[in-house]
Image (cartoon, rainbow, N blue to C red; front, side, top):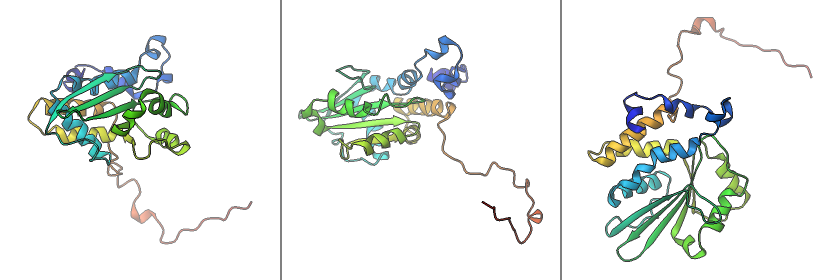
Length: 233
């Protein structure tokens, strides 16, 4: 998918512009867009050597304002990622980092694209019911979405995480990819293709108003004084 999108050999990415309820056909409505995007963008990390995958996750956490969570890369033994693991509840991903001395760090991740959280307690349930109590001290909970307002609402409703819930936009993911794609490595090539894919599905920074024609209103058309009528209520 990343290669076909990069080479403009497929237009399948266009369906990710629309919300799930914008499709009239049952077949399109039943497509799991979030799962496809997660698999397309994040799935390849499952095949990278630990040192390469570590660079993505460490840079993403740094970009999200938490650069101290992961231990140093030296001594890193393995990184395991499980997609849609189920244990009472089902987060979208569970990432485990393990070092030679036995220390671990855990990320549990909920991804959203064009849907809201499933009920007001989805994130709370993942933290309470999916993670064991003795795992919470070595874990972060990531909520990655196009816009993070529902994550803010969940935290404001009841903050059970302290500083262990990170709210990350897909634009921040793309910023991380843009940093890595300069590398001359397999990780760099993946980052370039994944960054291109997110660009095609509309994850782009605000560019300001430079594209608006400057001659649509001539300065001479604007009077030196402007008046308006006060409304009568």
